[in-house]
Amino acid sequence: MQSPTTVFKCLADDTRLRTMLLIAEEGELCVCELTCALDESQPKISRHLSQLRNCGLLEDRRQGQWVYYRLHPALPEWVVEIIQTTLNANRHWLDADHKRLEQMGDRPERAAVCC
Image (cartoon, rainbow, N blue to C red):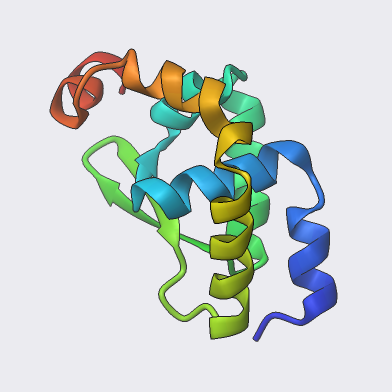
């Protein structure tokens, strides 16, 4: 179970918070989609995803060589509400991230191109 201190420490980084908000909005994203959307290196994104997974905020699934991330299905409701409230109040903050993600094309093409 996540304590408030753990959750807020995990979300206190710009990259991790943007990652969580994008995943919350999109439902599921692979590492390459996040690398493109956040305009960061793959090692940096992977390191932050690992931290979010270790905090219990994300769950991953493997599909072949790709790894997809989504919000952990066992997140307490208060954590989901914080993420959703933050997303709803700050969608403009993710505009550039969304633009880069959209430039990748639709999901099947992204999977073929990026991963």
